[in-house]
Amino acid sequence: MKACCESPVEYRLLEHTADLGIEVRAADLAELFARAGAALADLLYDPAPVAETLYRVVLLDERDREILLVRWLNELIFLREVEEFLWKRVEVEIDGAFRLRAVLLGEAFEATRHVPRTGLKAATYHMLCIEPGPQNLVARVLFDV
Figure 1 (cartoon, one colour):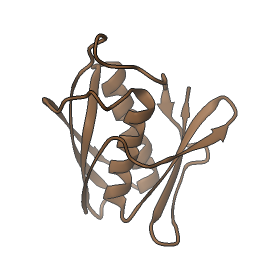
Figure 2 (cartoon, one colour):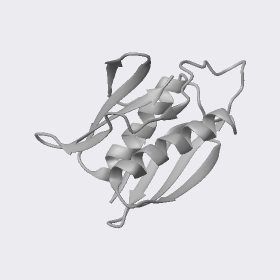
Figure 3 (cartoon, helix red, strand yellow):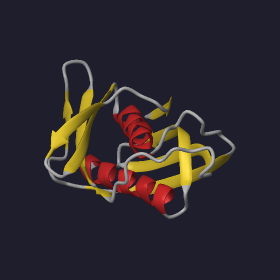
C-alpha cells in the first residue's frame, strides 16, 4: 500500500485531561499513516509556509500496526524537536509485514518564517486504536503535552 498527502488534512481533536489526541480516517493503512503524519505537522506548526526543499526518509519495522503508528509519530516528533525538520508532504508505503517506508518533504525550521504551535513530548499507547469504520479505517492516538 502506498499513499501521499500534504498538510493540512482533515482530522478531529480528541478531548482528554492533560493530553491532546487526534482521530484520523483513511481508506487504507498507508493513507492512515500519511494522514496522521500530516495531522501531527498541523499540531506542531503551521505547515502553510513550509517549502519542499529537503527530504527525510523514515524506515520502521514492527509486529503490529498500533505499535508501528506510535513509533511513526514519535519518529516525526523527534525530527521536529531534535533535527528541527518541518514536513509538508508525507509519502508512506506499508507492506503486509508492517514495514513502513516514508519520505517527508519539507525544510529546516526558521524562526522568521515558521510558526510553532503545540509542543508535544510523545505519542502514547493510552487509548490507542486502529479500527474499521463504516467506509474506512479510523485511528485514535493521544500525545503527552
